[in-house]
Image 1: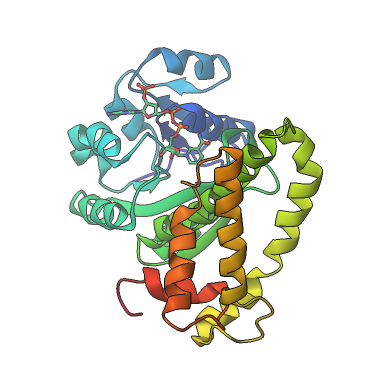
Image 2: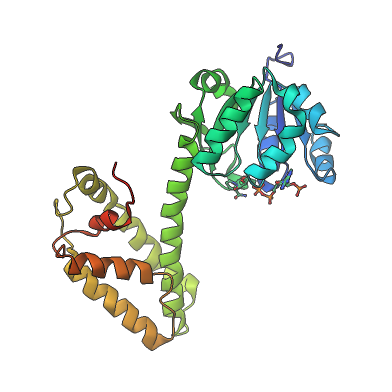
Length: 298
Ligand SMILES: NC(=O)c1ccc[n+]([C@@H]2O[C@H](COP(=O)([O-])OP(=O)(O)OC[C@H]3O[C@@H](n4cnc5c(N)ncnc54)[C@H](OP(=O)(O)O)[C@@H]3O)[C@@H](O)[C@H]2O)c1
């Protein structure tokens, strides 16, 4: 099938889903000079982008037929199926780049479904919020067909740095959810910190000059933790043993109770620290907690 190109050979692209993220993706392609067709379940969202130069598709089938490259970014995988199932036959020969958040299993199943429609499939994950799309520090992760990814890498770079993480379609999602886990853990700790100082009328913004450099400095501990995990040796170069840290956790819990702050966000971590210490692993670093959460061996 011919890829439709403009006179500057910009790949034609269709963006399916015009929520906050899909709209940002479509705008990045428009800025890059790509003929950009857009479709959204709620048709009114198409109008604004048409005003910016996009081609509005009234039906999802028209959107699919307009471009070989289909970027899909909707709420979840059931929404992807609901948009694409009715046009399954039109997908043959096209490349679906699915940037919808989901699980590795959903991505693998979607890749199998796309293959039954003779479409190539690349799964993606956006490590950014919409205003960052197309910006210099924006990274998107991709997995699945390497050939399809490499053929599109130049076009996908319109959205941000394109990182290919492997042929298993589930790997972009796995990395995405891992990175989001790191982010939410950090936010959970920060929320607890804001709540604690807030009990003494210290504003959250007033804590920032201390909190941000502290969290930034602590990220320098991550390589050591990663080395301990890879080595399976949780005492490797440790300077902060769990026995000591368990006392600190007990103090945070106790002070939180005194100050009238629930310990819900951090309680699971404290429980695991105590379990590890009572298992005789008090000389280990915090990294040893991974042994308590892994449910299957590597
Ligand atoms: N926003 C972010 O900061 C961000 C960052 C990284 C990744 N993401 C991911 O990007 C994806 C889209 O997020 P968003 O922020 O654009 O969400 P959003 O603003 O809530 O938009 C959701 C989109 O999904 C569509 N949709 C929902 N159910 C549908 C269905 N059954 N059939 C067809 N379309 C359906 C909506 O269509 P209607 O307009 O018709 O409702 C809309 O276009 C999500 O997977 C999200 O995790 C978002």
